[in-house]
Length: 142
Image 1 (cartoon, rainbow, N blue to C red):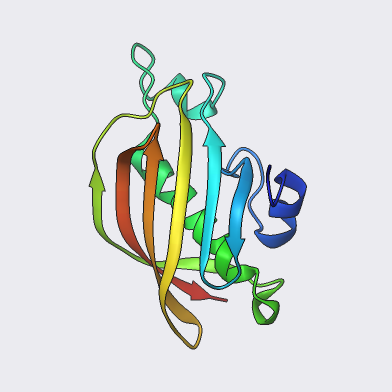
Image 2: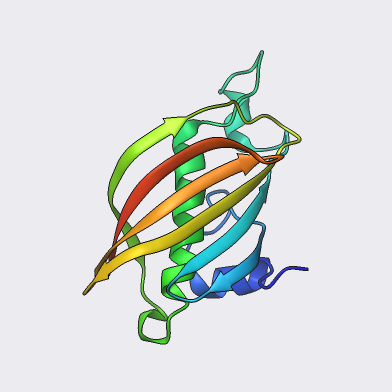
């Protein structure tokens, strides 16, 4: 059962359709960790051009989905409510498998470092238990 549904997610992060890439959050430890899910459907707007003959979710959108999961974790802290988490950096991103329509993307982000408004998250996305992308994400709270 989801800890947060779509409405609760939209109360925490400012993203909206078509750029909101989380469907539900199933684990949340504010300021520490979030586990979220994205149901990838053929109706996603990016599939019209990426690629029409072989729809594949763009890697940059997988990283963005991971960042949104991390943003839910960090912006759930009382002192960060109403703020926005911006990208500060993407390090060591590795793409391991394609994500296609019908996949359920599990998005995990653990906040491993925080100093003032800057932090770092260790992020991993998987489909059916297989890692499809991992990266270290730096964020800035604004």
